[in-house]
Length: 413
Image (cartoon, rainbow, N blue to C red; front, side, top):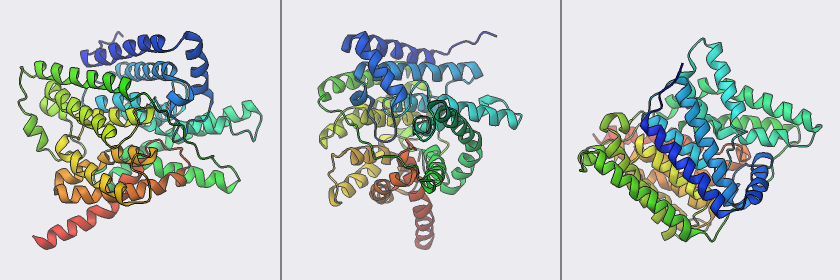
């Protein structure tokens, strides 16, 4: 049966085609081929900037392929565009610049498809979990190229274990949502952090460990700023036109706390949602530059994730206090504010935006402050296997903060 492709999906298809064209303008076909091979077969745990590992052209090709594959899955199962699908596509695009590739995402997806078959349910109910759960895709590369077994043995173990991880992932993700009560927008990152910590503990018990990794490209701020600013400005203009040439409902959107599930796409329409996303994109990009950060694979991934969740819970009013708190924490702690981990930590601290949206800016600042302290100490637990490390930190922050905030608010009232 032929599936009709929605115009929202066509927007992502066009952007993917543009990325492919830019890739061959920036790098030669030979450079792209060599770089793409590195993306597929080398380690891609946190933090592996594909632009540093393989070049900008190869990173763009991988990004385009991952986005197109994600659209294929969404269209194949027949899911219509909404806030969660937009967030998923932008997240897939962002993390395809550091950690995900067109090969290592499939064992996780396969495992979740098998789970849907086991439950005798349609895959449409699990496809979004499958896309977000590819946060654990580095396990495929790590287990396939550990070197403790002959090559084909490693590959088989990597695929089978990653598929099993996907199979057991959906019930864990559902349960984790209850733990933080919807205040952590990166719920899948929280569930993946727990599962990856268990896996890494098991591997370390048998003498298998991951090495620390930091590949971080620099020197491309001007080029990427122009590209991102053009993209986000275009989104604002197109959204403005689609919203009847007005910013109507933007203030209403800002009044939403953003707690899961807050689907701005369905609540307010595509037009004003695109305006909100574009505003968040410009704000996030300027923020990285103001604190002296680098625009590269990981930071662009963070920016695109914020933009994606601009359709599913985030807006400037609930993001800003959390990022202010994260920035204050960064200025006071022992790490440099423009160091890779802190730049990413500040960007992804916006996972806790619903706390400021629900309880006010003061609690948002506290949440962002504590988030940085947590995120800088959790990556060791999962050995970099969970790309959404800040979702893991956000979940723990919520489990600690939400009962305390609720108790004091009740006492004050």
